[in-house]
Length: 502
Image: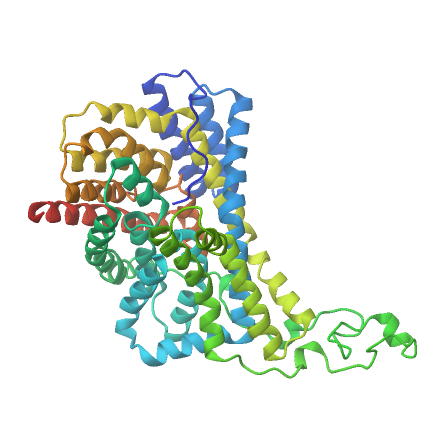
């Protein structure tokens, strides 16, 4: 699901088509076998799989390293920062009790059977302005805690949330893939948006609550304990330092020197209770809700500005800045520090500890997702995506089916939904001139559906879901990969149905 580096102007190898296909298959097989059979850590397996792919494709070793490193760097620079900022928001929500308040309100207002539907709806709403990865890092902590509180199978509510995010990411502007397809095909944005929502609603229902209820019987997922957004014990909050975590009047930690020399005259040397016993109060529910929704609103405002304001105007520039995912999430972190941290009675030291404590549990996730981006980049740079595109260019098929098939091939080969959308739109763009206005919009949606087909080990989103939900590779394929395929097929059938009546 991650947009990383664009395909280079020329592939890094002169290998033939058969050799490239064999290289892609062996590289993917190596990753799966190393993890599932060899029990090798996914991070290392992805590095070795990329090496196998590059060697079989006759890519020079130094180019393999450069390509893989570039994919890792672009992933960490984009998705990695979002994951870290999202984890900080989740940490403050958990430690302040804000997450507990949201969960109690959700559980109190929505019955167990309605939870999957509620999660799908919330995810679809939040997914309108958000990149998939941003939605995951904001929603998953709430999903994990709701599952824990009401004893509902994790997949039963997790799959609907993922479905809502994924469908909106692939089909509805202002996400980058649909916007690029609209521009390349000359489609009407308003028509594409309206028709995309019509396709998205039944697709989310079938791939979300319906499939989630089924797959929960076969994938007994258990969330990683380290990622559960629950408050730490009092003992865990008190730093083990000289002074036993006691604070001075300014909220700073008391040092050993302060204890040995209480009369030094250092401002604020009066000693308070240990940090774990500091008087705090639960944050207001509105503060917790705003913390979650603030990044969403800022990115939605940017999307509205892109649709309504002329490029280059002061208002458009301002919205482009504040609605950038990193800026929006940073604003959420700062808001949470103030209203969930300081206003709830926590000291500066404690808030800093909560932020820092939220990062170690996601270190493994960051490395695995980054390695997934590196593996994908080696595929792209070797020319596998171009191979799929060239094979489909001369096919004599209907524009809608051709657009869907090309996007499916590139998605499976490269792992990137956005790269698949961009490439497929470029291939079928000449055919768009022969279609009516609404049919061009449907062509853009058909490409978007194909771009979501069967996410697997070359997709950074695959590893993001696997690690956040504590799944094995096999369980991730049974749940996440199958869900993505359902979205692709059901969405495309919806496009074909609309084509009958338009």
